[in-house]
Image (cartoon, rainbow, N blue to C red):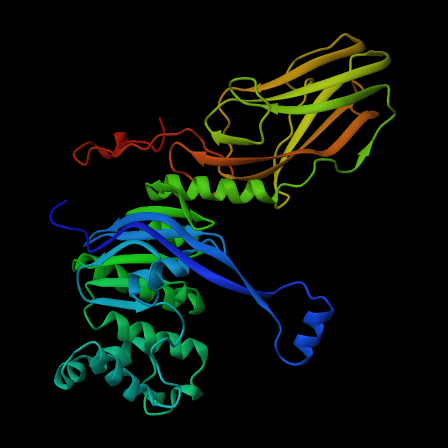
Amino acid sequence: MQGAPAVELAGIGKRFRIRRYGPAGLKDHLLGWMGGRRVEYSDLWALSDISLQAWSGRTLGVVGANGSGKSTLLQIVAGIHAPDTGRVRVRGRLRALLELGAGFSQELSGRDNVFLNGALLGLARADIRSRFDAIVAFAEVDRFIDMPLKTYSSGMQLRLAFATAAHFDPEILLLDEVLAVGDDAFQRKCLTRVRAIRESGAAIVFVSHGLGTVERTSDHVIALDQGRIVDEGIPNDVVSRYRARQALGTLGTPGGERWGAGDVRLSRVVLTDAAGVAARQFETGRPMTVRFEYEARNPVARPVFGLAIRRDDGTLVTGPNTRMCGLDIARLEGAGTLEYRIPRLPLLPGVYLLAASVYDHDLVEAYDHWERCSEFVVGGSATGERFGVVSLEATWHLADPQAPAATAGGNHG
């Protein structure tokens, strides 16, 4: 990559002072009554030690939970906030679309707002006029262009704001969640325009909770947490790991409905990784083992162990048991362990629920049936797959276009 980055942040930190009132005694109450309450402050570091680069002709995606510092980061780049530590370098014409209607006057008409924004960017009136029709057509507000902006719906304001930003040839474009307001058709239209802006050589920094959009449109992604960069790299990898961290935070305490005669009791059901260590996060294509720890309170002949895996939306993925798999357990007595070993987990990223059971040989009487005995997360796939539930471990083959039709290639290996 040639030249200097369009945006360069080195060691950026941003502190906000949070005001709060101190503890009040009798004197403080009296002072407060007189309008002189003592005020105390605490520091909140919205960003800490942020270093990154955004390059011309590429899109930098930023993901993170609410309050992680994403918007503050863009405001630092846009010059709205000055950093308390570190250095910011911006090289090129910058256009920031950070919130709906930012930089627009609600009292002015749509037409006047377009010309005002162009003038603020240093464009001549003739230059703005030459782009005006394209802006109005893109925003689809031609019938309303001479009405005050305050009469526009939120969607109309978004369309006009985006169209204005996108048609004034930015060399650096900052986008903060604004595309989430539009309908699907307009979002696709905006993303097509964003790709065209990037292909023209602009640097784009894109913040969004729409992880799929970030993954598809970004060349590089960073993940923020509590004002710090906790991950960065290839979009698929960073987004998959971010989804996994999010999902782990939503896992509940295992233990759903449970029933059975009690002749055999599941004392514990544990999920372990390739190293045999108990875990709740796994990856597609890597080993996973379900370990049943049981106690047979009475001798039991020919029991059947089983499990069921469901996606968190209730979709049943699989429900194997020892009888179907050909393992005939002649007799069970006392405590013991049984393992169900999955050499290559086929599940795609998501949250999954596990149920475990022990039945009699005819699958009529439940000795112990335990719904949602465990929850786990699949956080990534080596192939980058993310649609659906399972990976088929198939391969794609492009047929030789010169080959006879009867032997043109298949769709798996």
